[in-house]
Image (cartoon, rainbow, N blue to C red; front, side, top):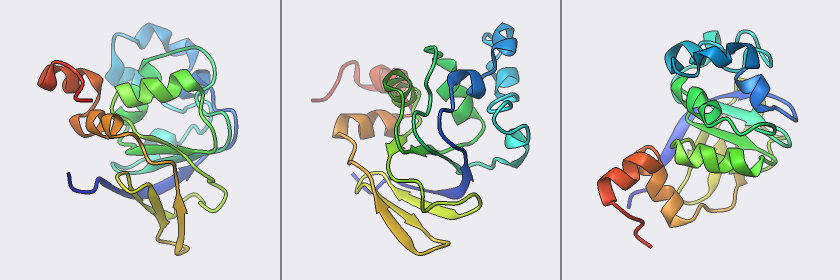
Length: 168
């Protein structure tokens, strides 16, 4: 399998970005209309987020990203905005799993040396992040092959539809 490379701009957030900040509860009625819900992604953390995000961009966060209630649509609407991956110091376990299932890479790494606006390149296969703006290279724990396979298919459902089962 060729290396899976992602490139984009960093959009930085702090610690404790909850699923309520990702998808505000006041928009719960939009859960069956994901394209409308996606227009409000990260609204309470940064009201300008959906206006400035571009396809391929990255969310860069601190500790405890995705804490709170288990909202499967939270990582999905992030992906729908064009975000290619989330890089964070730590992530809520269920949010991590929901992200992979939705085909959104979520990588645990030291994000202190990445600033908003930095140009980032991520090699998912090798576990390497290059901050092209600063020239700094970071690493993250390599994802298991089965997770890379799920991500390459766009999520768990497309993976199961294609293969019918896991290739372990």
